[in-house]
Length: 271
Image (tube, rainbow, N blue to C red):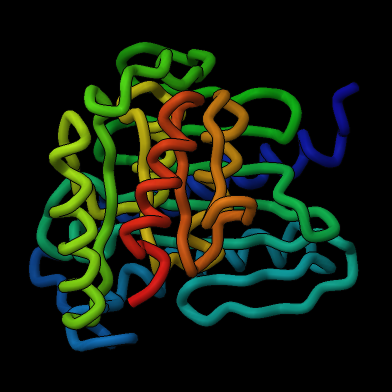
């Protein structure tokens, strides 16, 4: 049965992602500069991250003033409706800063603590991914219209293409590189795209067989994780756990569990 609330939340998330994506794509100044740093000098925020979050949160506050909000750039509202929005206005800020195309607007809606709607807009690809819990995942592309998403049939692990990301703190990044060094001979190859939301959607779309990363935040994960699961992928953290900042893993069935076991053995869950 279709839940009218979820349909309304999806429509709002799609509108907000579309408008923020257009702002980021069309409004990027030629002299874009770093506005602030976070966990390290290379963990950057630009004026466009801040502007996109203000656009999204302003639209949500106008349409659904009783909802909670959690945003990467500081938006935080408790809310009273049982719905909370989890927002990354610009996932892949360093890519955006350098003019690379892999960045996204990620918006999820939670109801009573469970993610029920996820939208990830990737403007430079002309794609938007979306999912509603229990209703599957779909993508709309500028070149191929709307399509249902399904993760790839599982290859043997040594034929799996897997993506990952690296922390902004040098010592942590060095350990993550060591994990990747041990893992790469056991796979087809490893990619590093620079946007967790896009990587999760690429698992959903069958462009990647798996993905893992340590150090993610709820806004990095919420929308993409739902989209991947609704496309048939498995997601989790350490064995038996949900994805979290400690470790997030996604993969097509048949790749997920052996990848997760290797990551556990290689210590991908700690610094």
